[in-house]
Amino acid sequence: MATTRKPSRPHYAGRHPADPLTPYGNRPMVTPIVNAVNYEYLDFEVLRQITDGEIDGYTYHRDDNPTVRAVEKKIAALEQAQDCVVCTTGMAACTMVYLTYLRAGGHLLLFHDIYGAHYKVSLILERLGVEVTWVDATDWPRLERQVKPNTQMIFLETPSNPLCKSIDVAAVKAMARRVGARVVVDNTFATPYHQNPLALGADLVVHSATKALGGHNDLMAGAIAGSKEDYDKLWFTRQAIGTTLDAYSASLLERGLKTFPLRAERMAVNAMAVAKHLVQCRGITNVRYPGLKSFDGHRIAARQMKRGFGGMLAFEVGTTQEDAKRFVSALRVIRHAVSLGSTESLICIPFLTTMLYMPPERRTTFGVKPNTVRLSIGIEPVNDLLSDIDAALGKLKSRSRA
Ligand SMILES: Cc1ncc(COP(=O)(O)O)c(C=O)c1O
Image (cartoon, rainbow, N blue to C red):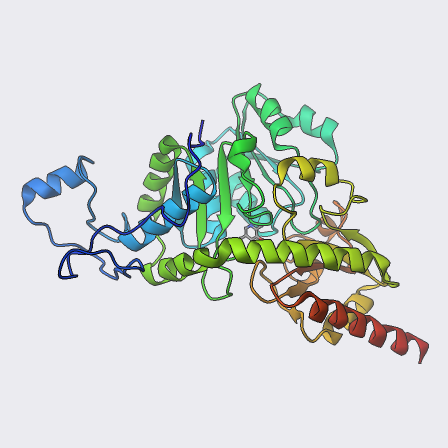
């Protein structure tokens, strides 16, 4: 059981201890950036106590760093987890999870509709002797059939990237339990403000902290939250392969976390308004936002997500990729860029960006079309976003009339 009994308060978690550099040992308001690679030992007994795990202490940055540790405790509190390991990127976090828990001859079940780079990692895992199967979130009978005695892990995103499909985490866990497989949920799209997968039954939760946790397009980081036992295992992997985050990025991430709940709330409110608006717009079809009652995954999302439905949506523009490109190019407030969860609204065509990692024939197998766009809503005044969309669609229409 990875959840803590009492809900912790992220603002107070991971507070830096009294700083010996301040005259009376009073606490700095901001966790200091400790850029040291190594730490001088007071004597051999202290070295022994640290290496034997008897006392908390720092020896070498690849092992641990106080600025990073403070952020880990805050993210653990946000995810209601016992602990958290932070690392260099979201994909580093996913790969650390794979390396820690998968073995040659074991089986990994992946949902098609997840971040495209997993396709590349799956090729590496296959080279190492792991059997990989891809399933569609909407094909439940196939998923049931694919859970086999050697299945070691089921990895999913809900809402998924880019189509925001909802997956019932508790139902997947019930299936996984039959064969002792671990359920790992990438919670990047939902964010811990809206959803806590551990409380829904997942064994581990993964984040690209590059996204809403950081929130300002200025750092890359990953996070894995779970039980204390999982922390120890994942810490071992990070220390061995050297994916420890640098202290400066950790400090930026801590700064991002201070406003994270405010940003997450605003993004969801904006996203709901944008989704409702898009449904009314001519030239836009298949609006996919978990908060829309008409959305096929709404009921599952409503059960799993609290306080709103996140800031991510997807939809189709016109009928061709040229239509989608013209729409994206005509936007002025919403910026054409990859990544998500930042203060600015960002739009991209997954076919040409996040799914480039996959062979073209695979990009359409689970519902993404050449004219599908993915929109990450920011914290701008919502009317600016709505007028930007209307103006861009207006330009599309006037062009097609000309
Ligand atoms: C849902 C999701 N998970 C993981 C990643 C990978 O994160 P990073 O780019 O920090 O490696 C991304 C990147 O876009 C993502 O969208």
